[in-house]
Image 1: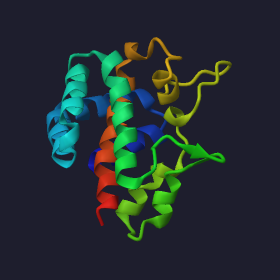
Image 2: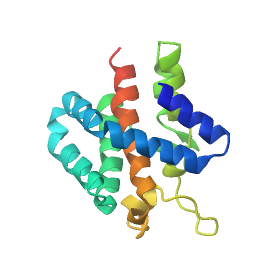
Image 3: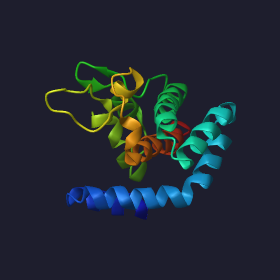
Length: 172
């Protein structure tokens, strides 16, 4: 939790490079433990998770990124019957997960990203490009996404979020 708070403080202060570096260091240190946790929770996905983590560790981001995104989407659907990236009438369908959640406190706070349309959920605006996003990567519109290691770390972060926070919230 302290890592989430620290990264959030960097972002709030506009220190995006520091946030990226901080999260990269965290994931580099914890990736094996995170992978084991994912595989324990989703043993039928062991081969694909292992292969994507291996690709990431080998800096083969062109392979790790789309797999991280597809697994985040599939696991979210498996847990909630809602695909993570689906937006309806300008609102993420995952908002209904937050609306139905009966708990409170920290878990409810951690579910709030399900209410947001972040850059990885948006279709690229070619007149005002944003960071590489899932739509453009998965639909073949981005051809250079694997050149930026932080895109892989962000996709891994999303996958970890779904396998930890969304998993925990749906098991109650």
